[in-house]
Amino acid sequence: MGKDVSEIDVALTSLKERKAPMCSLSSAKLSGSPDVAVRQFKNSERGGDEIKYGQLFARYESPADASTAYTALKATAQKCPAKKHVPQKKIRKNFVLLSHDDTWQVSDEKLGEWEHFRGLEKHTEPSSQTKFNVYHFMYDYALSGNLVVSTLYWERTAPGKSADPIAQRATKLLKKQLQKLG
Image (cartoon, rainbow, N blue to C red; front, side, top):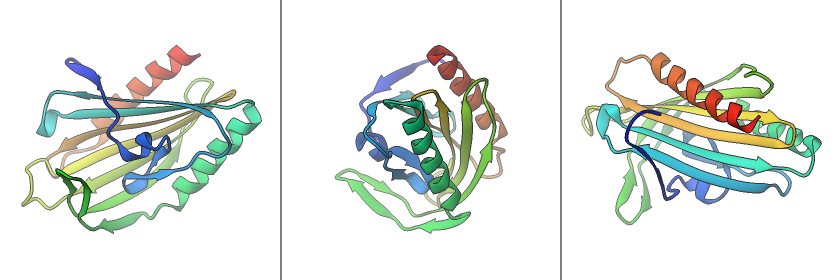
């Protein structure tokens, strides 16, 4: 992820609930009863240099159970709307999620021995609220054997910036993580 990255207390609601992150910062309940581990990271930067990353690992009793869960996640991701307006929402005492517009698309790409699909979301807040008002979220889901991995990598940019470099960084990080898992 780069320099100055540290593990933080899990703040992302879906991960706190031990669910897979999904479009428009929603969550998807995992099927079955897997053993679940979650963690979250961030760097200390703000604005255009801010990076955040969350991971969920779900270990199932069998590859068939893991495959069922992965298939269900994919079906959920494919049902997400291509465009959505999200109204302002109070998340906790000192944090408000600003109203924003989301666009969503899903793509398939095998990564080594891992089955994999990605949800790419562009989350745009009003430019009057912040200079870096565009968030690029890379939702990745991977399956190998009895393990399902769900990650969420995101960075902020000013309007008009391409998400391609962010997607490349997210893919590089995901590949590194999956290689460690086997």
